[in-house]
Length: 314
Image (cartoon, rainbow, N blue to C red; front, side):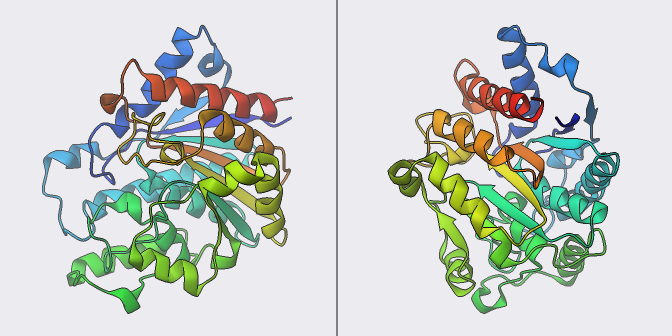
């Protein structure tokens, strides 16, 4: 039985579509509508955000609002590290997915000598850098930050000196770089990957379980195989982007993709993964109620969250 703490990160400066900062409150509204007292039972901390930057210059087109993202990394990583050092289990409820790199930094700050594995449940690879990003949106870069990856071989942008300096600072948050290795990364439900990211996945032979494999082999086998792949790791972080679910379900997210997993598969998968004693942190990201109807995405996400919490507290 683990003592959970919610870390709320209502930030959306890393996304290209507005509204993800409202995702955490949308999940709370879903809890209220279900008559749940979950958010009264579990202590929560609200990390100060930099969303005011949405009304200012975006800075570099290749790494938009990078200064604000760096500020968020420093704040979020400190909260995650503090939570872990107090022997709590952090559940990060995030807006856009850019802050997941900060979560990884926080885990490493708390346990610098531990070997950290990452299970990334997402339609997207999030392996871009300012040198390769076609959009400049930082929510497509958190794993490159954690891997200290610039992907210069596939360079298509020329970021200015200030952007490069800030990017290098971002990679070094926590004074550990890289924080994870390619062999300790597993993708589940991946299906929308750009050529620059495919290059890295193939080059480093990253373990990938796509959505069709989940459906063909079942959640139990996928979870077992993913955990087996990370058997050499001493700690595991699970990051769940709601766009891992099919676009018929995940309308309330900024980048929905067809042929994803179902909400039932997502819930069962996460419960199975969370059962592993090495899992030290869980994150949910990218709920955007402004794109949704009747708060359906948040309701589905809350049901999944409730299952995860139930598993951790029994």
